[in-house]
Image (cartoon, rainbow, N blue to C red):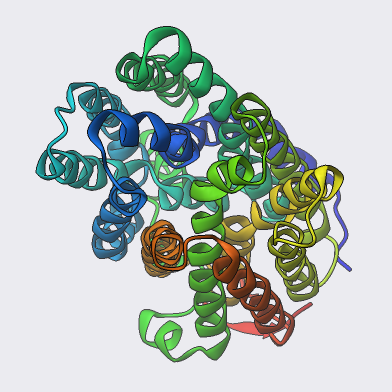
Length: 422
């Protein structure tokens, strides 16, 4: 167990506004994924598109993100987060509004998602986790939990909000209101409060101190990280979990509809999952700061298997469906948080932006494959049963991968050396 004392309280006094801005920034990035399932039905009806085609949008964006994330992480290590996050938020707002001008052309759909993917990589998880991880140490687990709860907040609010906007304003204006409204508030908060270790270094220089040098931070070199088996296990587990859980997130609305749940109730059940996603991130963050993270992460991710199992034909009932949404929100919502925390502990901070950029590429690749994977299974099998079975087995396997991690190293303050840790 790890103690939490005065250092943690000081971190929170200095950094709570940063966590607020980062969390809301990440929630804005998460809107498109959280809303994708709500837009499937109106887009399919208007343009006659298959679910595989509609689901391909997130996959296109994720593929671009997977390609760019490692390079973007390297730039963050050198230049900091604020330089890219602020223009990235503004451009992402405009990219979201562009979907209001869809004409039914699959090529236009592809082009819009390509543009969105290139732009939105500047506001994905790497930028927010790098900023927060560089400022917090003793309270890092909870700080990352609150930061990444932005995606759970988006999952909680977006389904009923998007459904209401589509019903009252039409699906075109729903894209516009989600982009300008949510994005505008995220941009304001980040303009006021977003900073990281690079900004602190600049402040010290202005006050006559030494410049910040990321190479003095403790952690693995890039060559060492490439050979580290713990980081490989984290990456593999994260990729598989993203394939399964993002596939479920995008299609769960339709899974519920085919189980006889009304459109309105399905939206609120999706919101329930988002609420428990916030609970899961906060509780998991608290636990990560106090107990062995591989046990916390492994058991939490492994529990996602129950959510897939509870949604299968022959098992589900109204109460079991509600339990599935609660379990899915609580456990599956922590996957990026767990990956980020474990990466800081096993890889250190020397090249965290770059290393987590590679993790983010795995996250993006899994996110892109998941919706198409689930959609293809549905189109081929005529139902989601095989996908839910694969999700049950795969989630349990991912939990075991994290449980098998060794104790993480305790990094020295600047030399990069490490000793055996918790």
